[in-house]
Image (cartoon, rainbow, N blue to C red; front, side, top):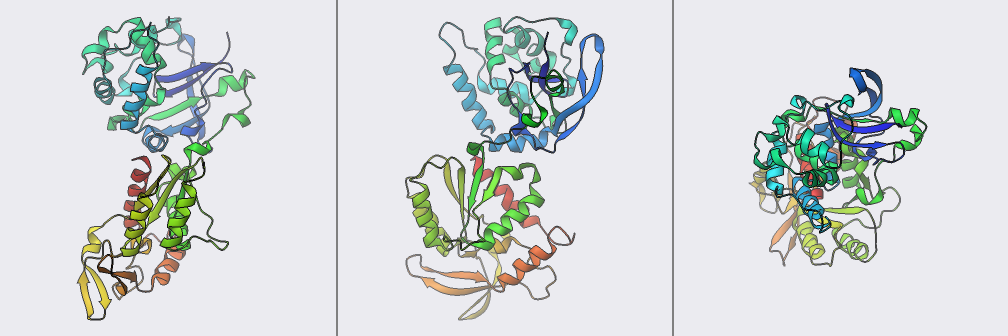
Length: 396
């Protein structure tokens, strides 16, 4: 009879395989995600065995970075329709209807057939056992009367599309996504040590920044603020004579990257200052490959009225677009009595504005590495906003 391996959300099976024939879902998890989970068998029998387990709310971030945003799911849905052979009918159900239906489903309310239900013909499991379930049909209309051919379409649809759309319902985000692998390991079909493949090169993101401290700050804060996706990112090694510091060299680096077939996705981050915005415009004018994009550090309201120092003395000014570097996203008040300030350093005639720099930025950086993650009073809120912005830039 063989051994089954299943990807499930709560009691709902999302994907399954048998013996050595299965899709490897390890990229949805971290290697440390193995935990005891319930396995369901015939006649109501259950056992507790090791499985990969992670909350759906965490997996959603990983799915987005893998290209399964809601918009991306629409593209996958359309691609599935276009790749369906002409002799098979495609569903009349539009992606918008399918999305709306799945976003209404509470997976812990779905009663699915157990092992005693027997085997299903192609398309029958989706059309008769799942999509006509009251939870799937409550927005429903067309999902209650699908043909077997239409059911076959949904059985062949990428399971990550279904999983991502179920994540649009906040009530599902705390449900465990479980990859139950133990039976195929016990059956000798695969070694457990070989099961975790992780991310492929094409799934990973290379972060490129203007300066060496920028990359170090981002790498350290990623571990603290976005541990669910830490394995998606690598950073250009800044420790050995990094040759690309400064916006001019960064643009030249991007020119080089745009001409080679690097597999990683690349995110180039430039400061939200006068020089950085000029570099951004020059980078965007390059013939960038589809896996490469650039982002300017985000505007924040805190920077709209910021203390500045210049030839005319002290003032409060909007420094967005003129002087915001990554150091500005650190806790600028931790252990300090004097408020932070920007010093205007040079004038750019082409832009018609000054370039500024955070005064004593090295001191702020040292305080970050010394106290961030160790002292609970160190404020990470701006870095949290920054990483939220960068993740959105990656998947945009």
